[in-house]
Structures are given as C-alpha cells and as structure tokens.
Image 1: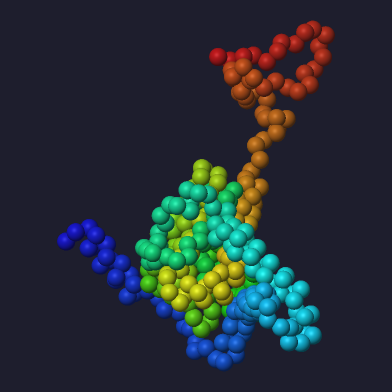
Image 2: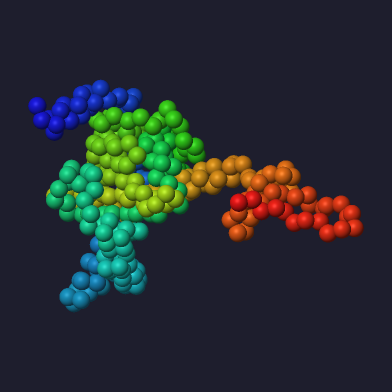
Length: 314
C-alpha cells in the first residue's frame, strides 16, 4: 500500500467521523431574509444597469421617446452606464486581487484542485503584524456556531445568520475534521475540504484561507475564491461578486485586528526589566564597554577624600 493510498484512506475515515451540526430546515422567512439581504442590492443595481443600457441603445438607434418619464430617465441612464463601465474597467480588476501581490495571485494554493479550470479566480491578502501562531487560532474557529466570521455581524444577522463574532480564542473550537460541515447559517453550511493546522483551511464552495509567515513577527493571510465555468459564473458575477468581496475583505481585516490586538496585550503583560536604581549594590551589571561592572551606591558618603570608581571586572 502506497503512502498516497494510506493518506486517502485516513482522510476518508476522518470524513466519515466528521461531526455534523444540527442544521434546521429553512422556513419561508429564512429564504426571504437571506435572499433579500444577499441578492437584493446587487439585483437592483443590475436592473438599473440593464435599463440604462437599453434606454441609451434605443435612443442611439433612433427610437422615439415614448413618454415624459422616459425623457427624465435619460440622465439616470447615462449615470447607470457610466457606473457599470467604471465597475467593469476599474473597480472589478482591483477587487478581484485586493491586497495580493503578483506572486500570490499566480501561486498555487490548497483548494485550487477543487476548481482546476475556473472562470473567475479572485485572490485577496492582508499583512498582519503578529506571528503566524497568533493568527491561525482565529481562522480555525470560524463558523456560525463557533467564532463567527469577523465580518459585518449586523449584516450577517440581518440575513438571519444568528451569529456573534468572537473576540477571544476558544481552545475548544480549534479542532476540525475534513468533511465536517461548517455552518454559515442555522439552515446551511459548507463542507471542510482541507484542514492543515497552522497553515490552511479550505471550504468547498467558498475558497481557501492560507497563513504564511513573513518572519517571526509578521504574517500574510491569503484567501482565494474560484468559480467554475457555467451558469454559476453568470450568477456569481451578477449577484455575489460584490457582496462576497465586501464581506471577505472585512473578514480578513477582522482577523488582522484581533490577532494584532491580542499580540499587543501579550507584549504589554510582559514583566518590565528592573530599573537601574532597583539593582542591588554589588550586583555585576554590563558596562558600555561590554565588561562587567560592580554597581556602586548612587550617593556615596562624602569623607573628604576621592572615592574610587566602580571596579571593572574582566
């Protein structure tokens, strides 16, 4: 039996044993809240853009103005077309690689194999002023039933997610198993496709999160989302691309904020070195020249004769 085969069997066993959350059946209220919050705003913008383009195209082809309302809509149509062009030509290329370097965009990441030939490939990154071991625990405990997603909590709860973003690391939330369902909402979740403690977490249908140390004090948190070709490309581009970026960006910044704050607290809690005047007289202390010097009294008594300086000890 090869090593690869053994690894596949172990992963299959972990998948079978993966815990299943208690998800409830969605109600009509859940569907309306979720659809309205997630898809409502981009759908309205898409309809505005389509109506704007249609109006201007019809006018360019010499079509008549049917009513006064259409005449008043023309400035709005021009604005709508301008906004759509700005998004496609300038904003969309930026949001598809926010914070990422050229190397991070081109590099293969865990989870890429789930969508090997994507129609849409987005990579986002952020630098965190904290070591990798301080960043990973925040990522490991994501989930509606655990630490939340560190994004816009009020907006997620508006969609009915019923979550609360954690502000501390919970040791009991650090263990995961490949195949377990990570809840996004009380009614649905996504399977955990890859879990490499300290480095990578991949949610099938969402994307990958990778922790990469820069040095002992800084870390890069890289996230990638890939959309397969087909109708899912159209629906994602029209309805989900902008909301996904907004929430994902806030999530990365939320992890950054929490990891850096925890590191500052730990540094502030370290005991301060003893002050010079608290050093016991006669204790060897380093001198400027690098030699050991025996500390003398701060104010030697005035005996009328010159007092010797502190002795240098080789």
